[in-house]
Image (tube, rainbow, N blue to C red; front, side, top):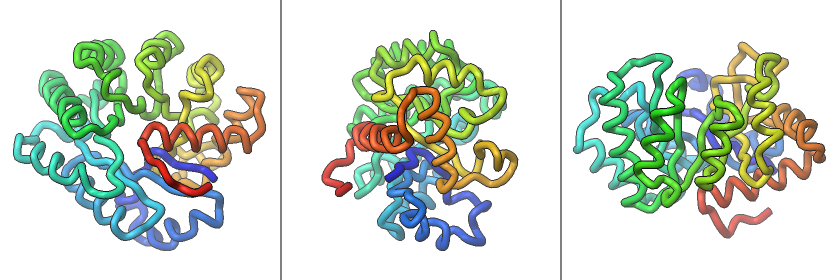
Length: 259
């Protein structure tokens, strides 16, 4: 079955049918999803979803767009909840120079701080990096992030940057962009990267794969990404599902789940 390693089911886009959707995943071949916090409030909602649904795991952290008002008290709260059952990562954290909502120096400060938190609590990280390739890599190397481990979410750079992260032992998150006509660069990365380093994600409700692009995304569309990935790698869809499932369990250090 398929594991969605990155989604945001706490988003208001799911307010009308969240329960029905999540409870119906299994019959559509979706084994589990990891709901990812993007701030303190969304991390709190993630904790609620994790407690409510057996097939939802969670990550807590603050997206670079939301770091301008962060405090050390917030860091203490994140630390206090990171040890809860089914919380499997710190994220999503990183740098975003596309929106530049927070000053870049403030983004860098809290990126480093949250990398430190992940190291402290022994969890992998979910990295958000948009139009900030050089600074993200520089910080991650300086912080010896290969000792922490994790995934580069919604990987959007080229093969050269992929090579750097793969050398550090990071996974690459692959989602709906792989099906886009303008997704050539990601297709090249997927062709280059070993299957053992790729995980499936949706970033729901965003980045819906073709032919549903522009509509609300959800985990039930992941077979479309599987199909494209299988075509590029010369594998069957089932092989892609099986390998990415094992990768997801290794990424998030989840053991003891039945097939």
